[in-house]
Length: 101
Image 1 (tube, rainbow, N blue to C red):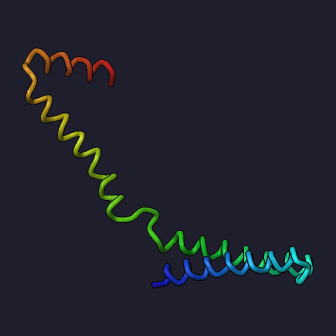
Image 2: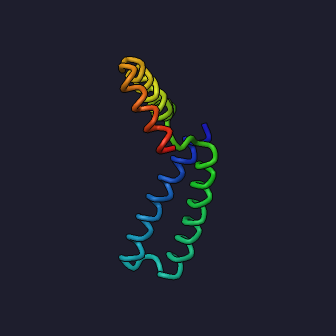
Image 3: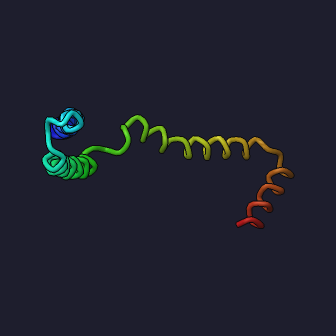
């Protein structure tokens, strides 16, 4: 799966950047080299995150279905509660809805 490979590469880039930064702090890598390498890795990371955003869903299927069901369940509950009301209360609620619409 392409998304899995992208996530793996993003993790690799983070590890590489951390290790290289440590080398730079210790003076083993010049600041100039660190800057060039880090810019390259940041660009690659940005490209990979953009690609991942286009191929991976922003929300898992179960979360999406739950979010979609909630308004329908509320509407169903409201309808059932309205039907259970006495005629006078139904009239009052109907007038309120018309006034606030």
